[in-house]
Amino acid sequence: MVSPAVTGATERAMSSGQRRIVLAEVMGFCWGVRRALEIVQQASRQGGRIAALGDIIHNPHVVQELQMYGIEPVDSIDDAHAGGFQWVAITAHGAGPSRVRQAMSLGLGVVDTTCPLVMKVQRLAERLVREGYFLVLFGDRDHPEVRGILEWADTTRAVVAKRAADLPWTVARGGEGQSPPRKVALISQTTKQTEAFLSFAEGLAGMVLPHGGELRVVNTICQPTWERQEALRKLADQVDLILVIGGRKSSNTARLVEVGRACGVPSYQIERVQELRSEWFEGVQTVGLSAGASTPDSVILETIQALVERGFEPPTQFWRLDDPDVDAFAE
Image 1: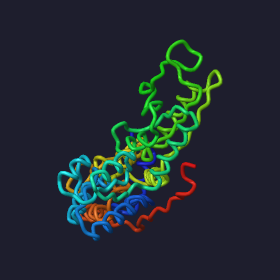
Image 2: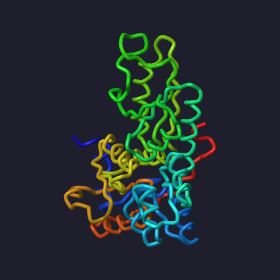
Image 3: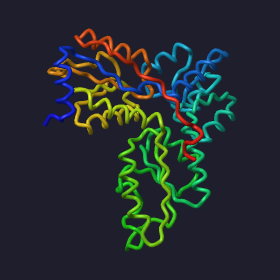
Image 4: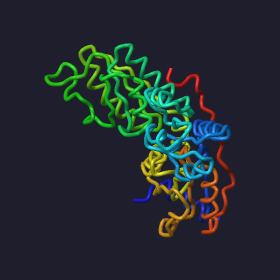
């Protein structure tokens, strides 16, 4: 079934006789990513080879470009030491404090590009644990940001979960079986989808709050993430098809595709223009374009050019940069 939004977009474009490109109001490099790249590139100009502990940001184009500056991803600090690097870079996703201690013990310098918004979630996790809460972290267990937050929390009283089945409890407080402790706190990986987090929080409340339970919920999905999701929802009302540009490892990019599909608009993720498929554009008059927070401007512009070559008119309005309120976040 075709959604009313898609039908309306097609009718508007057909009445004008043009195939159009419409851009999301906010997309592409976020503030934290721009900051991370500036830090690591500045460090590279000081001399010495830099080993990044994973991808500085989750975009293959950027990782390849950074290698031209002598910044290469490695799997571990031991690999960096064995490879003769002088510096290790903590990625924008952050890492646990043990990484810094290990690097310094091996005589390696540390370049910390952790996003300040992620840092605030790390400190919040520490504080909640000190205040006696069992910590529930809504996120992807193997994501580097999540692993770093858990290490900063430094507790065995924590769990990573995306659904009720991931929790260590089988019944609500007061029931017979494994039930939650009295004090539970819920935070999120910064790049998750707001609606999914709220739905999870509602279910968790049903388990924790009975019989005098206390649940503290702090929405730590960052402003650049939710701004891009909201911009994509607005975009969905205007287009027949959504393309989201971003790396396959990028959590926030994957969430944008989910948002587009939830709005009833066919939505596809691409890393590069070579992945565009002709059948996607059959009967399409208006294409919406968004991009993950780690997608460089150059790739967005290449995609626009590829669409123009397919017969679409260039966009009439470009996207804006974000400017998150760091001080108010996760307080």
